[in-house]
Length: 417
Image (cartoon, rainbow, N blue to C red; front, top):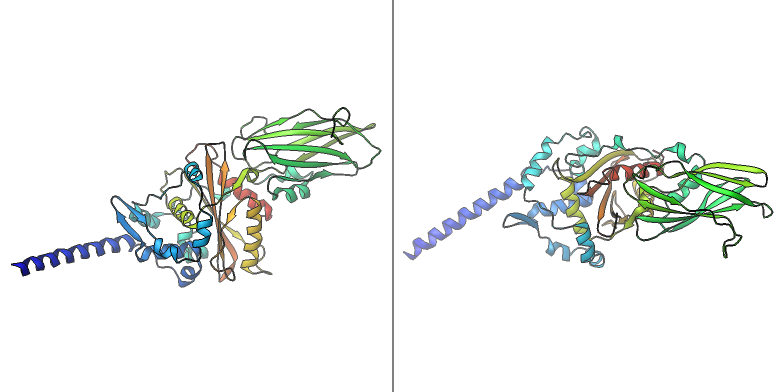
């Protein structure tokens, strides 16, 4: 009788084991098999490959990612420990364990996704790098209007990539120059700007100065307040005429504030137009997030359904340095720009050979709402002529619906696309 019970126990255990194997096969059977080139080099695919080999464990009604054993042995463990965000920041960003209980449906729906890049070599080599149901199209991005910055194009572009606080000459001619100083006021969503008007000759004197704002009068994206002029006479510590501005962020935008300056030097009247080096990137803030949390968040947003509140943008851009420089040279230059735009860039696993970079920043709208912005730039090692630029954000708010498009426009402007 005891032998019969033992046999029945083995039989039940065998059925359970077979059933679990069937579940596992069903769960991962639709994951496409990518080339070794992608598995050996792609940051995200390395993590996905790890999860495919058994790092998902069923826990009641959802699947949780449990990669503690691999993480402890990872060379990135020290970095992750140093970069752990505070509980407050996690609460503000609402970053939790991604809900992947419908993981099987997400994988199946990739076959139904009609990506505009499905015929491109970058998609063919790495389809998982592209978002499922992309809802922000690069062609809908409004370019930075060059007609607004024609009066000070070189100075504008030079100061645009400087992180706040910064200062520099924003306009100059044979008669005078304008020094621009920008700093954060109450929070990253509010900038204080001081414009100092300096004559080129110590014997000349600027008088009757004024500023006129040529855009953002509707206060839909920016609320800009302009002070009255301050002159050296009667103002201690003021060596040259000054005008102060306060810039409050309301919504995303792609056009810089355009100003008209009026003044007088003796009998000569002055009237010039210039643009402030202020775009949506000036309101971003550097943020630290463990790479594992970043990966989970990226995966969750990229594979979210059509009706999700997430924003997903993928673009394929030409490499302007392809003929004379390596992929790594271009990525290093791009990383330098992204760092100045307040993106936290994750160090590659192999600093001597990499073709992909990832980073994160946040946009704080007030003390209670912060929107994470994730970026990934990826090449195929054998194809240096084009690259994928992907942006993701988790924003359930109805505001900032064009955020990714406007950040995309800033990057394109910097590289003259």
